[in-house]
Length: 347
Image (cartoon, rainbow, N blue to C red; front, side, top):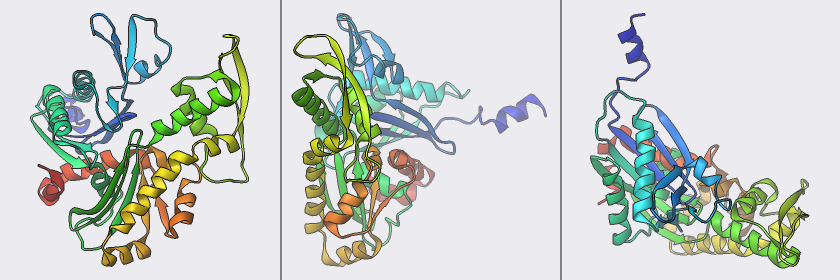
């Protein structure tokens, strides 16, 4: 095969003109039209404290959390689902977009669709737009994360049927009832995976006099955390610093106590689901009884959370096969047919 033909086959000559971004508190995911999800990195940036010079971005920076000397700071520029540091977010987004575009010969300023929380303020919208434009975007469109998640899992958002989505991210939980390209009823709370991590840090500190970092708490949550009792109860060795002696030590933590310490945060999520159901029009509520609720986001991976919500609401709960990529997949679907999905874009 001639070299030119092989280049075309490998899509290296395809201009990067359409990019979807899920700018999440915990992770940033990027998809390219026609290629699917091409990047998934932690939303972390390591900077030099004095000069604010960027040392590393993404996974390399996340490995530095809680491990840096005084001169280096590992920063999470997004907190509670919104941009807390516009400058660092801009650097991070530019880095990720360049990573995606570096694999292509044509450097076309891309059209970008960004997933944002449904309760985003005007100030936060401007921050997202300015960060994306400064990172090299030609056009910037925004879509509410629950709407993007619904499109990503294949729900018929264009029909009069009621579709309910619970999107549990790192900083926020977004609950929305969707019909006819619009969000009819929604609730957004700033409780997500980060809140569960903080609860675990607090529990270990209070009960074991052991200080651990949030990365360790996240590992505990993922390995032995659960929302409901199960036959597969687990335990885990946890290492940290003893608050009394100051000496590193190890303790063994059981899944039962992790479940107990995260109950308050999980109760907040369930209350938010109830609030959204209470303001849902009765005709759409009947559809939810028939078709159930779809759970997306990294929080949907917590063992037994779907069972807990099903128990509390008496409604069928469906968890997507790959819940972490639902929002960015939805952004990709919008890019495939912008004219069709124009009503869902935030002006």
